[in-house]
Length: 256
Ligand code: NAD
Image (tube, rainbow, N blue to C red; front, side, top):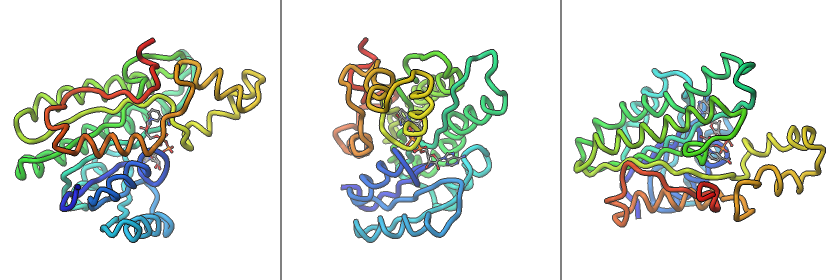
């Protein structure tokens, strides 16, 4: 159980982050949900999750593309014992026509935010002698695909930063690891399906099986619950000696 632990999950009003927040709340942690919007429905989502699990769940708006806001998120939350860096975006284009603003946004949200939140959270974790940092990287943190240059570069960067933070915190009761999912059916992936159907002239099911899950030998999406459960395990005593490494939930993708 994670009672008495405060968890912050960046980019968590949707998709994987929401699933991870849900599993942390189910395990008894106090949870902070985040995104860049500040709507009533964001706060309602948090309150409803808290009621369901009998824990405090707050929503704190902060834009993970801005370093100062990343650091302010940790401060506004009152620090954290568990930091899950999940916020991420995707853009697909050949490298020679890749828009510079998209490159900058992906590097800022998918990689630099991890630097800023981690830097802000570590002093509090060190003071308590306990902390867990879980970075949601990707199979694209370990391997590449064409046309995803910024995403692949950022996710490889996250894996590298994970190893460094693991070394800098070793022996301090703090671990830092990256989870590397293959394809998970979330809004981010759902949004890619219509374009892929057009490009390949295929129906939805064929695109899912033959294009999206082409490199996922299990031919099955990973789920947000599985990623949440892996996060909870990384926070448990069983995983105390797991640090500076990656855990793949990719149905065999990176074994190919
Ligand atoms: P999603 O689009 O459903 O969720 C992304 C979340 O990030 C949302 O809550 C969104 O509001 C938030 N976000 C976006 N920009 C932000 C910003 N500037 N500041 C704060 N929050 C912001 O996507 P997802 O599929 O759940 O992806 C979550 C993470 O998992 C990403 O880092 C993604 O790269 C990674 N991932 C996803 C898959 C997959 O197949 N879906 C696979 C591997 C890794």
